[in-house]
Image 1 (cartoon, rainbow, N blue to C red):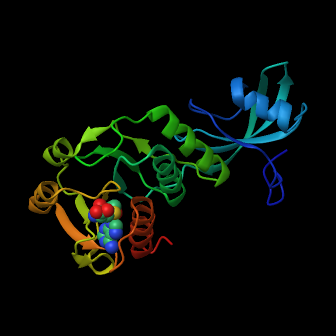
Image 2 (cartoon, rainbow, N blue to C red; image 1 turned 180 degrees about the horizontal axis):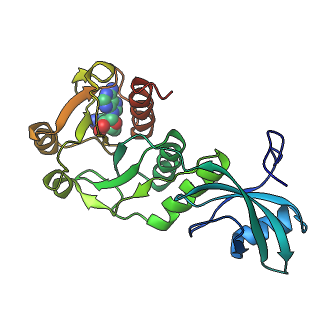
Length: 245
Ligand code: SAH
């Protein structure tokens, strides 16, 4: 059945598929997703699912075969093209796992193009599992009807990130010690927001960031925010300034 305003129903399960999708394609679903569709949602043959691939868009598929631990769905219609994503990166210093996962999830919902984990002197954590971040982002995108996922950059040290900074991308350095009001400082063009760890940046790091030609030190107001709050507040302000809010 073709897609109409009432079809597929709102309750239709939605899944990210790791390969490019196309009309009439049979897509095999196994593992945790199959368990969810068969065991939790109890889908039978003919039931609708929506799929997106982070490449070509979103599709309507119908279950064409159910096995014990896997199922096949067949793509019937294209529902949407992949959305365009604002050219915004979040450069986030590592913070404790749960809060870092939360930031990854929320930055996917809000629509960043790239999520860059940053290692700084005061980070209390020095590793990040990219696949875990990816899982959180996928779940957020599935639930929030996103058709695009942020790229996840490999963990890198602050000095290496500053050294290899791409030309033409403004680095908004969120600094609780003061800076231009973020809302007023936003320019057009590619952007990145840099947020420190729980303990903030060291004086040396602060000076190095401020000395970088792409950096603009900005304030998110007179209150010191926790890193996770600062990240989401800054993303929201930037997105609102683009008129994409
Ligand atoms: N320096 C503090 C707090 C760090 S808050 C301490 O000693 O504990 C964590 C990060 O959130 C900071 O590095 C900064 O990037 C961001 N942040 C928090 N409040 C902010 C504000 N009012 N303006 C700009 N950035 C802020």
